[in-house]
Length: 320
Image 1 (cartoon, rainbow, N blue to C red):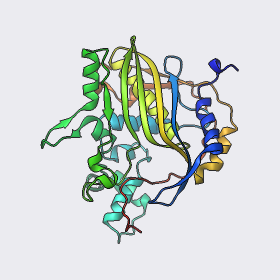
Image 2 (image 1 turned 45 degrees about the horizontal axis):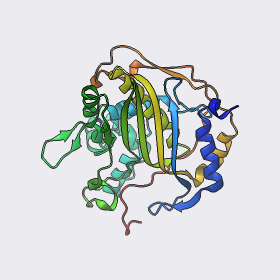
Image 3 (image 1 turned 120 degrees about the horizontal axis):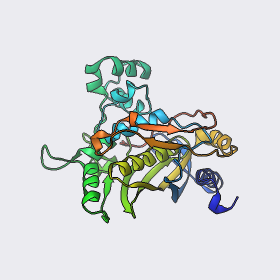
Image 4 (image 1 turned 180 degrees about the vertical axis):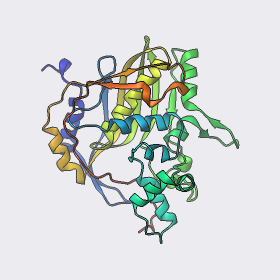
């Protein structure tokens, strides 16, 4: 197969081989978990031809769809996800709860059950302030009570100026991140996919994502699908055709407990990508709901299970 006709999923698979062969070993200072990583990679997917939902293992589409809507609608409480049996964000609020309630013997399963069944408990402990949805739709400012809807601004800007070079949404706010933050303001979770830019390229919408930290096996397939879907939805709202999704990776790594799973996935040959169809009215941000997205012809290999590593976020030298 010529390079021009090579299945686009090989970008991902070939990168996995590159990381295993030439990546450097790093250790997360908070969790002491080791990774093998490379730095500074660019991939590109043509959304006018197909939808990049990886086929060499089943990607959790229901999670992709509802998480994107969770961000898109500016939500910050995991109850929306829990109520739809999506549990990809369970670990961080539970981590936050355990820090505040060190004597509690509640398990994560019991914690999540209470989030789903007890609205008062969910309001208190299900919140993840300053997560992507808040940064996209309600960026906090120094003026009390004023927030900035970055996503709406991007839509308005591209409508008013189709040649705009400034249609950027940023989730990286140093005030709340890592040792830049004060103890009381610090987020307990990392912002990984931290900035994206949208551009009208001759009537086609292209979205470029910069992701500063990338979990190759569990996170990246999910991130590809999520931002490709975001591009498709924004194209529909702006009455453009889907163009390209460009994914720029900063540090992209394989966790030490994912190596065997990656090797298993690399043995598989990609199948044709599926397509995504948008149905119903979609003229403004508020029109988007998950039921308007139809995934067609997805025929992946079976899933490959691996444990999520909860790393990053606020770090204390004195923490045990």
